[in-house]
Image (tube, rainbow, N blue to C red; front, side, top):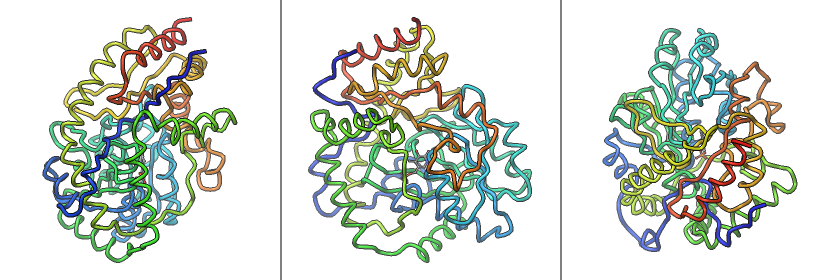
Length: 404
Ligand SMILES: *Cc1c(COP(=O)(O)O)cnc(C)c1O
């Protein structure tokens, strides 16, 4: 058993907020990010899931006779909840073996004339093969929504993710890079689709001062507590309690309410993000450099594979996703590391059908690769606070788990 650090590292690398981010006045978050990422205008919403709801509703209006949405069998439970909450049918697509992306053969089988949209997902900052999803989608007349919730700043052949498909969305939730505690951004290449997304939001999303006040307090809490000295209190303690009770889904925050709040983001909260976003390009670049070094060292451990970019992709690195040779070895590594305060965790605990609380909305399906991916992967937060001492703890545990 490894002794716990007096400090706690976060499970994902978020951009720390500063007191000066809360000064009044400034500019528009969506505009600053669009300029940085060289995208068309970005539409600010109250969460990534809310952005996805707006995207799906907009497409539903364009193709009301198509009820099916195809999603990766291993993804954020909020995606399944969003699809279900609009009365659409969820269809799971298995992953490629040893990969986070949609399996092309399974995807071709899953898509037909009833398919409204396919949701390829840029998991953990890695870039998905959207081209492949588009080819299959367009064959049957379906749309493609890129889930780039975890990939703000990622580039595919020099262009921001989210622009190859019909619609894309980013998340600004706590723990996903740049955060205003909860927020999301919609993007679309086509001006007409962008206008339709904005109209849909204007119609469906209203001011809700109660929600906004709550998010303000939570954002202040995040700004105060997102540091290694305070993370044991707000992150580490609930995590260890969940693990002790053998409730890993609660421990990593995979259990969500089945209804999604939608409300407008106040200008003030956008301003906080605007100021913080000035530091984003530098933050992402440092993250890439850290990840490159971490990856090189971890890959020298026999039996450890780190998911990486393919040629032409330049992802972002909130986490490193590691795959081990078996579930037993993955579990042994986590046994040593999960509660140790070094930022080790799991992406999502299960493939979607294996969450008990989702059983009424997700049907079981033959998805062996997604289950295998859930069973053999773990994540390491690529935090700037990950020092040599924490790295040695990680290295030691992974070596023992992978090679014993
Ligand atoms: C977090 C996440 C979402 C939802 O974004 P929120 O901003 O938390 O609503 C959707 N998809 C993936 C893959 C995510 O990780």
